[in-house]
Amino acid sequence: MSNDSLAGLSADEVRHLGDVAGAMVPADGAWGVPGADDAAILSDIVQSLGHDVPLVRQALGEIAAKAGGAFATLDRDRREKLINEAYAGRSAAMVALGRVVVAAYYRDDRVLMALKFEPRPPFPEGYALEQGDWSLLDAVRNRPPFWRDDRGTSAGER
Image (cartoon, rainbow, N blue to C red; front, side, top):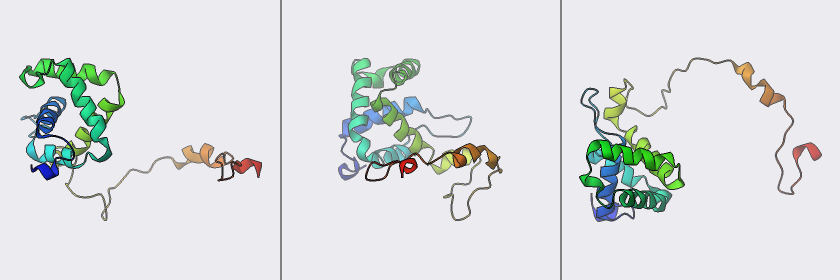
């Protein structure tokens, strides 16, 4: 990964992100899926950070602090425990980290194929969905409008 593609993270932060992502979603030989620390998946994670860079950087810092700066040297069980404890707090930083890791992971063709999904965009072919009970929306359809226009007047006050 070139420095131009690091999306605002240092090379050390990207390595740490790979260690953390691999602990969050480890490889599974039985299913034939890579971990989230796989080079292609890690590259996708980094490329898709966008506005989440500060939050991901904060989450990586929190994890490093909890690990005493030695996350990469911890055994698998301790890494997983540390990640689970950090995520249990549901801080915005940890939620953002989890979101970007999982989103990139499930975009990977190898993961989709292991889950028996065709690795393709959902359109133009689309996916067949079982029809649900549309009458469940009647309560929403029948309620009066509740939004406000740009003058601050609700739809029911006009």
